[in-house]
Length: 466
Ligand code: SF4
Image 1 (cartoon, rainbow, N blue to C red):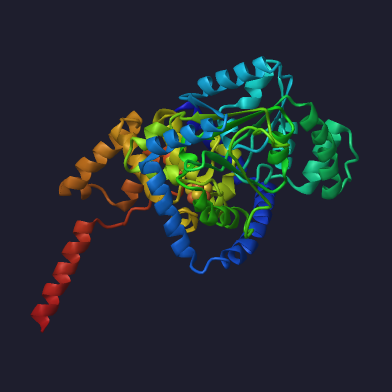
Image 2 (tube, helix red, strand yellow):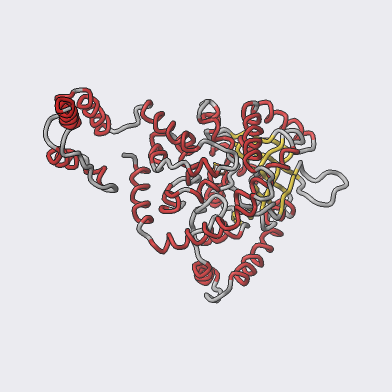
């Protein structure tokens, strides 16, 4: 068992028994469940909208090379710069080099999972640059020294009392502050940072190849401020966030907001297509887009798993997942949690260390049911499992167990050996690990062969009597 797998089991065992954690998650997901059906009523046919979105993403991903080149061509024609990063290290190197050139001491950052993926804040700290999260949820998590808990709602596991206590500890505020007062405290601190920062970093919800633009969706306006005040704007984005046309946003913006938070449309939707142009009053002097691969082309190379690149990170599958609702976002030990995280993480980070995530599913299919772009998540989880076996990522005990099982099931004489209680004793004694989280296996007192013989005898007797 890998280290990551052991940690996952240890953390999830604790979380699954933490009733207070479950109460908070159920409360927050309950609020989500109450508004999403309302949001969906804005679509005449929500199933058709999901199907259409899947088709658009299919086209974007199938022609990704051309779309990316088109994006680069148009974006650079307006003075933007595109940097291609194959790995986390390359992306960090580019960002550090830009920051050094701009003599950056403070960097403001809006909510972006891809910057979590490359651990941007830690890297900046190593280079003596203060990197401040400006999304309220992310700011709370940064204050607490924790990674985001959920891809849409980073501090979902914290109650308002938890946040008030945290602010009191870290910022010296009154522990009885209300959510509105806490928001004002954060706002006052962050407003100063926007004006101090030399560099602003954002992610992108979508990149638009036809107009060479970047689309950012947010509810707080912090992403706009992060790219409006600093003189340099850096966008870090995974290559899969591609949409062929700006007109696709008419479908994807409402889809993302409804499936993400139940809103008909998110509060701020911005399209940025380059640095400030001559005659314009707003915008940065320089704008960079870092197109990040970091394992995505491995997924692209796999015809079955390619579908997972359609994900628009709405978070609906996390909210629907019985496993996520029990163990929470941090137990996964990866940037992306929940069903989509369990699908992509083994392919992004390696089967050897992360295949266990694909096994952490009841395969109920709820994730597939709710996915905004109809990704067959539960089938991809199964495919990951098959792939891990094909790659030989199984333990010796597991291989032996299946070998013995195969031999036994192919031989009637072995299947007939011993009665039910003996089998219960032997099998439950051998598979102790299996039993840690499950009930005992319970064999039938009679073998199939015995039952079949009895049935045959009964039928023959009945026939003779008649
Ligand atoms: S897999 Fe589907 S439901 Fe899950 S985050 Fe991505 S788009 Fe949303």
